Image (cartoon, rainbow, N blue to C red; front, side):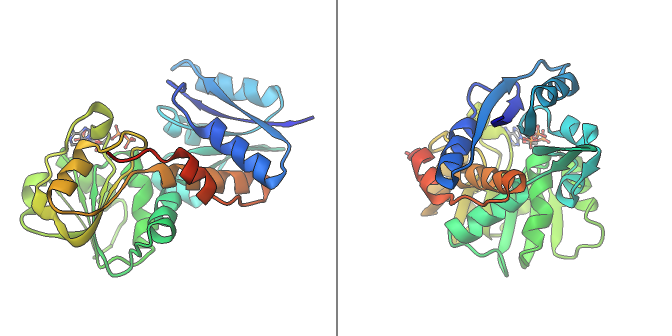
Length: 273
Ligand code: ATR
């Protein structure tokens, strides 16, 4: 029987995951089908069980179910536990395993696809929701000189940095407290651009030669990227590479084969302006 996989979320119509995994399967000669599952907001665990009973082998999980995905797992890998959320599930004989590849994918995209090593850099992460929570430890593992989490609600920034324990390189603050500090890498991990909004970031946050990275994918020149451009930043990127890299990690986890990501990134890239 052909193995079944899917992405589950609500809404899900916009998801590129079926396209990505179908391209991966074709390139790697893997026999699988990959669907979209729109799940009722109160029906996540039943939908997962139904999918499994119908021959499903694994799921990608997107908003708003990443926390529930971790909660229903019988075993969670470190990255999922530390992020407090899972973006990939794998069905095994004795249960459900949970992983979170989002942070690793961000690092891979920055370091390999954008040739932007994090080691020694001053990094600013905007936001303190699930996206930033998942990115923190993989970013720190790369050895930045300093990593600041800035958030509109300061208590949330304090909490996510506090979860790291003793970490002298990491700090948190509100936007007004950023002062004149400049950063080599500024990553927008907020949901502001999904609503066409701009986080209250000053243009002085970008150091000369900085890379401005928008985790959201496919929205063109978002208010954050437009701010960076006005500030003179020439290296701008959105999250298309992160999206494809997390899919490649999931594919590898399920199938034991890591597909090439570059052709799929090229196929999905939307111009930034
Ligand atoms: P996700 O899991 O995708 O990160 P989330 O947990 O809802 O989503 O977090 C969204 C993040 O975007 C939060 O940090 C939020 O700031 P608050 O904690 O202050 O709510 C941030 N965010 C959303 N809209 C924003 C805006 N217009 N300006 C600044 N930050 C914004």
